[in-house]
Image (cartoon, rainbow, N blue to C red; front, side, top):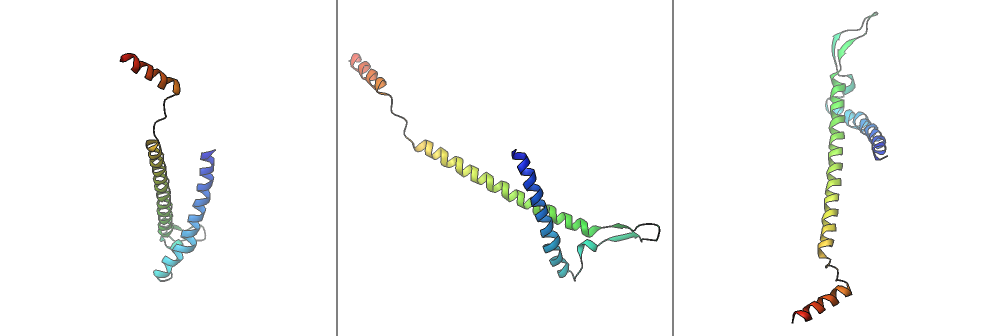
Length: 122
């Protein structure tokens, strides 16, 4: 069940990151580069004709996918690091509480038997 939830959340998160890159970051970067849309950047190998489609290397889309990957990777890294840090602090606090607690007092019958033993030694 945890894995299914992770996959669903991951898919939704991917859609959000794709929208962030495509709709927010890439237009801003395109504006900085003189109004060029990254999705349209490509090397045309063979132009389209009436009978054939265009053959091109879409390097702009490749750059966009690299930015998608970097944002997703950074976010996952930060999330995993935060979760690990939280877990370490929780475990350290738990160990601290266990170390600070005094050992439990022995039962009354053990105390009585210890006193009897000590008296017999004398």
